[in-house]
Length: 295
Image 1 (cartoon, rainbow, N blue to C red):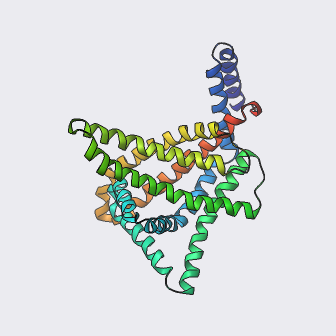
Image 2 (image 1 turned 135 degrees about the vertical axis):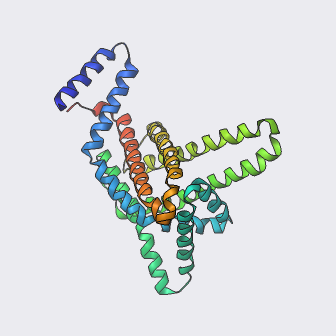
Image 3 (image 1 turned 60 degrees about the vertical axis):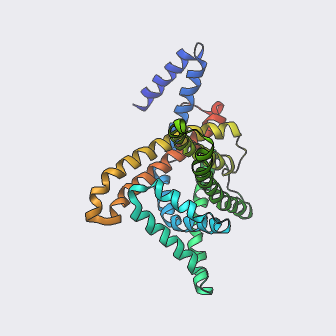
């Protein structure tokens, strides 16, 4: 079956190579990406990343809050987070409470500080696992520990700032710019267009940032952007369906409470990592298309 499929793809590429170079190149990239996706056991990797994400979720939110408090933007992020997951307010409020408790404990002496450091190692573990996966995709060795820590710290500092900046721009655009400078007859359309486009831009920037800097090799910006553009778009589609399913799960809240959101959240998290990893495979295939061979 595998040999027949490869032969079929080869025939399509051969027929389209002379007349339709773009189509031929697209098929090659897709084939290589899908082949490497299974070869690198990305389904298994996504499962492990889902586990590490659960461990790192509260510390990451706490980190965003900590950065937000410095610039007095914490409430802005909380509001944006609740609006984004409006169907699961109870669960989001609990996560916010856990994150705030974590920040409060960091002021409680040596023992509490040790606990906080232990929790924040989950962020390092998550980034380390992502780096290992990316290096495996790109077929390169790991960085030295010193260089890896520099990369991790860069991500830990930059991602919260990016997310807070997005939340701030969103609030400023809606509450200040549109209200003051846009005429009433088109306000609704401006709101609608902005709320559609803004999440795409944010996820493109984050994905491109990771695809560009995480592997221990030189990745060309345009290929990282192509991978981010495709995977980021599919991620936003997934987000749309996740919110849609959330609204249908509200009837279970009376029985299970906030726990009703957990199975759906885990599925969403797993699928998100699969899309993210496929974007990494696409980035590799774009840059190394000449090395792609039909096996």
